[in-house]
Length: 174
Picture 1: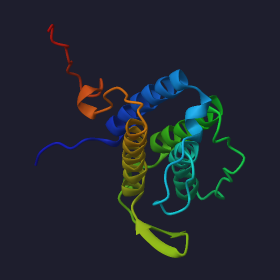
Picture 2: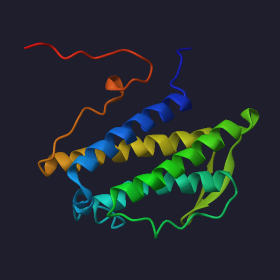
Picture 3: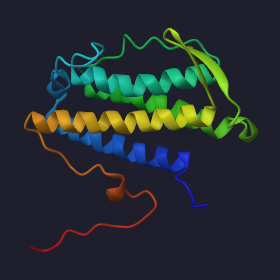
Picture 4: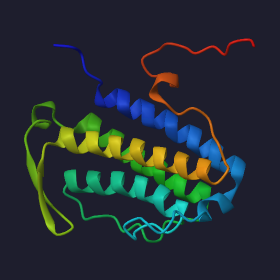
């Protein structure tokens, strides 16, 4: 069987990607968080800052669920201040890492049941943590697309260009 990508490698990649997004958004200033995301979504997100907070709040709430804690109320987390929302992201990532490092190895593949909105969800802790990380990757890609469509191109955020699993990219002299 071929080796797979580990949760720790996905955590490392999303840590790197968060750092790149923090730097990119800081260069544009807090006003970038007020960029409207459009009218064809599900209504939960009006501005880019809502989507950034959602990335971090999903991580927080899934770890709350897996840790049998009440769900954190994130409504007071600013969606218009880059430092505030990314400070929240640092907290959520710290909580995720503590959970991953402390969770008993023999329990990663035992399905758990949760209520999620009005649905019942049955999944293993491994699948839930993988979902949290892939959810984040997917939303950063949406943010990159939104910025490009509004005339704000950015850097390469692809896994291939990250430092995870080594390798390097050199710019050609043209």
